[in-house]
Length: 465
Image 1 (cartoon, rainbow, N blue to C red):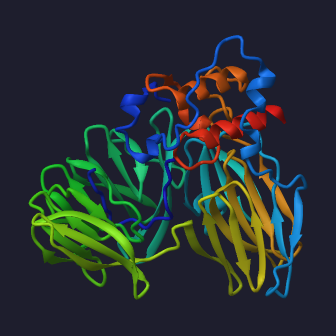
Image 2 (cartoon, rainbow, N blue to C red; image 1 turned 90 degrees about the vertical axis):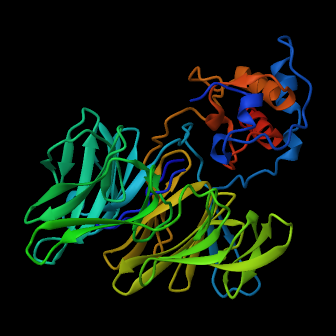
């Protein structure tokens, strides 16, 4: 899944780093390319296997979801009901989503936008509006202009290559991707956008861009293919000239990256601090491996193993989280209200505001929160590409835009349909060492980035229903 977090430009970070897959090749891919974790069904299917036989096997292994769309649960220690929602999903599957802050296309106020299958939806004020079509990418800029005033900007790259900043066409310099308020080209060039009066200026950063260091609240670093991790900053000088500065951090070709901990190509372990200033802290030499073993003082605790097999421990500055949680976010809804959101690995969202709580299933990410007519609303994206809103005051859970996923759920053979042909292919995949699968993401029904017998049983259940 491709995601863009809410970003601030002027400081940027980068780290170096559909398919027809055989099982042998698949085993060596990164986790987000799927992992076969539970190959328990070893028998391949014959063409004469009946549909009834296919659908009946292993369905009992799947816990049934509630038949109703709304259930009120009353935990013993709770004083108010927790509203649990399980709306039926569309027969679409979300592969790629880009979301970020949005202002220009939201009438000048801070909102959110999400890009689904070429359509950019603006979310907020109680609705989801299709603002632009034929969009290839977008990002948001929040930076100081020549007068020192922070300025918002919505950057949009159309599919025909047109580049827009707050609706005005920009000089194009080969940019093919937008992220963290910057644009990159296929030739590894990186450009930052800096506001000047009522327009934005493309500023060259580097010609050795690889990719952004993930999860930075304020991007400040990028990985240069020749110089390792590089700090970058662009702003106006005292004379009003645009100034871009770069400096090597000192980490060359990191072999291991774990949050703010790096092991470089010389087996040296560092911790990289970015607040209040960028600082590289040496920890030890001769590091062979690094693993997270728990937490200490609320932060992640790592054990490192040296080349002589001695071990030691180091505390990261990265906050420790419950391993069942994949997202934790606080969103301001205005009027002094804050919405606390938690998404767990089973894709269940729990939202809380002023003691009021709700839970909804099959959520990909949260998008935005605001106050509409005095009522607090939370907007979120579900796994089928649909956009929803929950009203904490009325307890209404409303679909604002229908499924806009990029594939058909369960369609692992890529023919645009979900039927027993997909089920046969999936069982062959799980039980054979040499089978291939064309469209594995549509088969990952529990959205855990792996294909296994659980997904197979879910396919059988869905076909039965």
